[in-house]
Image (cartoon, rainbow, N blue to C red; front, side, top):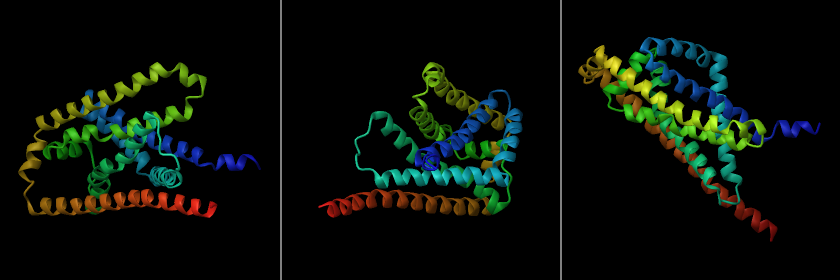
Length: 252
């Protein structure tokens, strides 16, 4: 019976949900890296990735893990008494809570486009749309906070294992090299879709009524999701001190 509380501990669930999200982000970075070989190779892996994550079990696992991880992060804010952090924890918190702000735009481009307009995303279409909108630098930076948060979180959780300490130089190299290769792969795909004429075609049709209406609808979704996210985080920050004040008054 004593093992049950340990199994259901917040730390274990935070690590488990974080591993799922880390696998998802790692897959994205690796997928972008394949763009160094060709757009076709990246497309092939994207189809495999979509078959996993957009299946019903994959969707439940991914979004369930994201919701659980975010809920546990809010809980940590709510119950925290000491706000003096080591520098590594400050970076991890910043990266973790800034990630959803960046991902909201990505969700609008991919998942909402699929749900609202029945458009199946592929790398040619996604990369062309990003380049046509002039947001390729933003896209390259998109996964950096999540990758940094995941790497630091895994290290903090697993650093007491001797194997992790022995692998530390290799892990640091991987943490630095993979995002660089991913950015290079995305830039290579950007050049490829421009050479195919896909970007200029999108720019030419950007002022069509349907395209303008779609952008306006997606922009409204992004605005509402951003406001909702910031409201939830702000509420957790405000309720924490109230809780601590109530506990202190009861202790007197």
